[in-house]
Length: 264
Image: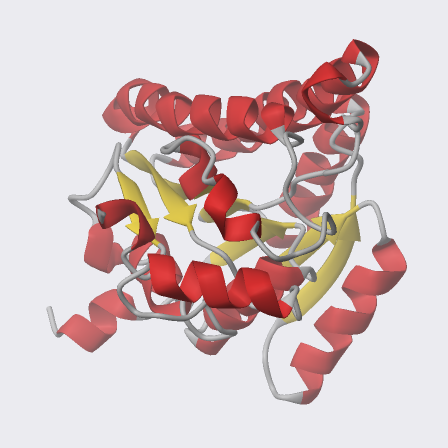
């Protein structure tokens, strides 16, 4: 088959959690540009519908939806609405993450750590299992988990030198914990779903430029081979590859997309 046909997502239905956020917006846009019907979902229906409407104005097939990753019943309800409206689901991108629950550094309130893991750990598990049942029954699909270099590497405090305490510290223990678990859970999912022709892969992403402190931008740029943070196009290609039939023989992988940061 022609490689461009393999990369096409025409006829496929894709769900992106947190699909109107920082990384989510380029993920959703990339899938739509490749021909997929795309659903972006998070707690904010208004935000998702506004972003979907902007994509529709460009000629793409996009829809806004809502769910709460802390509430299993809303995940099941979202699955039911997807099946009722589209009859299938070919791609799930687990991009949602809720930061700021565990505050106060390493010795922060453990209840906040538990809240973070409930949403970013248990909720991620429930979302994947619930939507995975659709793919299992139809005998095809691709699950793409959005991980982080923080799930592969330990903290690098040098990145925060010169930020005046506005970034860094010893916060984020919950993020390292659940992103590391996501990477390993990807391999579990690949093993479980393999017999159903459903693939699961994870992207270990680097930093996305988002007007961070100039000192952080400088230090991060020096720490990776491409010498910059990611831009609004940098993960589009790998997302389309993993969502499409071009990656039919790729599963169980954790792929760094970080400008070479993790290669040092």
